[in-house]
Image (cartoon, rainbow, N blue to C red):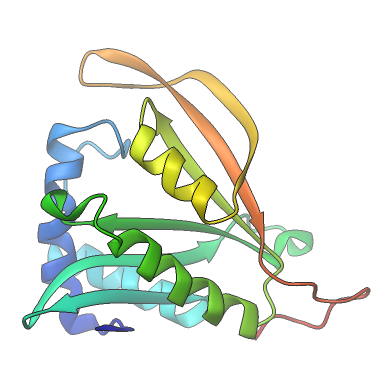
Length: 171
């Protein structure tokens, strides 16, 4: 079941995310966020965009969210998106299901473009994003240092909806 996250999901989301922070370069965070910090992130995403969780057998197994791409006003129709599934659930369709639900919500709210940043190498994430309609927009080489190595980050983007010219304000 995919549903809108609540602040009560913060501890589960933090627990799911922690192994990515501690053992991978998929995220450039170096300290796992606490449940309180994750609740703040969920609240911020819900206020402007959305945060969804994938729940199975009463447990959060994945999440996705969108947040502002940039603070300058001209970017307000664009958003940055991300998706995380339990490490054992990668390549099971969880990411696709979460993104499908997220994009439907973002389109309905009047967002035009979604941007994803992917640390390389990460064939699974690049494959998911391509399958979801994202196109390569550029790569920053050796932009982040984590776990004893420099990492590249590729930017991918996807049009969400034709929002008109001039566009209505996102809701």
